Length: 533
Image (cartoon, rainbow, N blue to C red; front, side, top):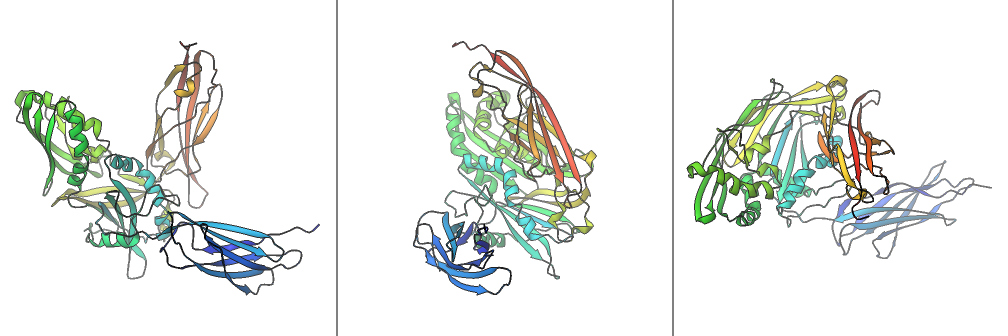
């Protein structure tokens, strides 16, 4: 009996997650084929439909091909209303009635506003960038920014980006890329998440206009260098957003905060200034001064941005401890944005209080593992490269924070990579209710490893086994995950031993080599008698 073949689409445009203008016709085109075995059959109808609007017949043009029946089609449709995303449906039918359908999500064009990025990173490379590969890392970069985005959402701000701007050399190859991140109010027009992106991005006209507001940042004269620049007044903008929550939390402890300001003084000073009154209407006026610059990294070879010195004054003499306990506590508990957390170092007499910059700069990585496919002329770069940053400058420019440095591309070996795992080693709960306590969070820390998305997994072994994947980012060398411990609901009372293992594998661009790291943790599930039984 002859095999029935259905038509199939060779390609369809626009692509998934395309952006179109509302109430403006846009073209839907492509090709569709039907091999028609064992005898020719031809596609004689293609329709295009937006949402539930009436389907539009496409114009057809048969393409001569001796091996298959090939038809080009074209139709114009428009989005006339409704919420994004919209559904574009294309259906093809051949002369025997066999059909095939393809759908696309489309968005209407976002009205754009121009604003300077909150943070701009300029990267200059001696090897031209592979633009499609760099743009393809948007989703991975956004995963690495998830924690920051959540912190900003807590204070009513939206993190959008990254957006990119490429600059070509005289030979037409890209050698400089600008990366921009925007921190805006919720009303700022953005393109919503989609197509693998977990965060919004700025419409390209708005992004390019925003980049134009920031002159090219001077970078060191080198074959590979970088520079970072924050939007003027960014620190005060963030403080203004979080101030209402801080004042409310402080008032619950009998503390009144009248003002909260951040000042920057060139070349290297950031000052946090608070005024208000303690319980019993005792006034306070506290200033925390931080001097920023560069310091040697832990490897004692390269340099990182750091708080070089900090000092404080309160005007309260020997009741400074009261000020720390009562005034700074609201900061610690309200501010999810770690870079805004004021902290007390009770064990350090000379540096009792740290200000806004300390948490921002702590843990800034100096090594970024990546794939050699990021560059066009990658043959000169060995497999498993890593960018090592050496900061040369870091300080204050007006009301902005700026820094720059050199980049070195080194080669990673198996001996360089590592994986650490941390989390609870004992999980306790009552018999019959263990499912209520088994959603525990564990933390991973990678060293010089960018795992393949499908080769970063956790496994649990013990009385029963389970496994799953870990969602990571090429640029995120640490993160959290929640494994599923396979404990039956009616498990017997007692201690049950499990082993949580994590394995991460990174494959070279030629698929012939790998780097691997693993770690494990012994976890005891403690099942207690249920007092309600």
